Length: 428
Image (cartoon, rainbow, N blue to C red; front, side, top):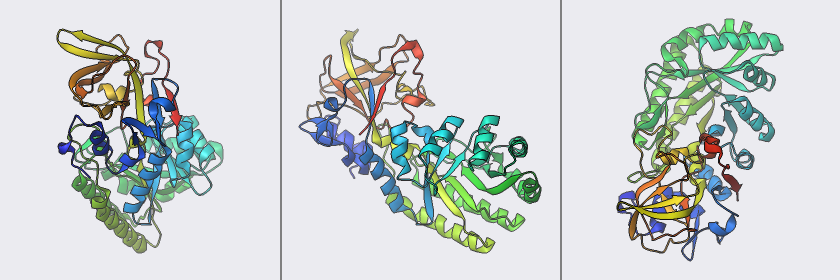
């Protein structure tokens, strides 16, 4: 794999290859056009703005991850990354289960999952309807607090059914290098790790209240490209599990771990090398196997991933509507913007906005001979697609393809803002 800092910005193909890493082959190149199945993307869909997702890329992402995992560790897809129904149906044939964050996601997952796939729901303020649906459908509830455990017991009593529950743990550490810390310090997510042993000691009382404590949900952060930090976090989780087994005798039957695998989005980012990460996964599998043997049970372990599985499978396509020069800056004003792709504008959790990988979809062979700013159609200076990006000379009607757009795109953006039309979505 070529190194990111060796990219020639004049060559769109190098941008594509280096950004997507080993998944670059999912998107083709035909006579200077970004293509799929031999057909330029601009000929594949009727109009812009639109998202286009590739089945081939989804297959490749899951296959590459499985090749780095021991057979004892499965894969769950976190629907929040991209809930587009056709994509979800395709993922159902690739993964071992789904993680949900709402009633709608549970309903979607229940429709596509087969009998061998497990479902779970996480979130710090689950509704009574969500608890009820999860209990009635055998979906594991990741409990985020002692108060939620009490609400689950009430829901179980009212339904006359037992609740499958995992304790979501807020660890004493965060995933270093992660774009979003989900553990360490005070958090609205999960139960503080120091309170977990006391709850494990009360599992008999929980059982009397209608709760089957099936396992634990472990998540410390997301969007990390630091292999050493990811490996260290996995090791730290196994240490906690070992300590809890020693102190309480509890061995989880089920374990969901969010490893926080990141995606290369910006200049200087390098895609994760799963071959380099494979030894950490192997070490995790071996440690959990030993814990399971010591506890007299098999620990059914799944990694929960969203962004890592679907980001490279999507491109956001927008078209240049106007080209203008304002006091020395050349602007390409496009028909798509932050109402469809909030993360691209830098307004979805970014401290500082950084450029995303985007290419002139029908001019990959043309030299990037000018520097331009790209703006969307909204009446706000926040509607930014790119700043000082190198592109070939483009005119109204030319297509822009924003790579790495398969995760947290349409569903994570303010689509109702200014009452604009929604972006179309396609799976091919």
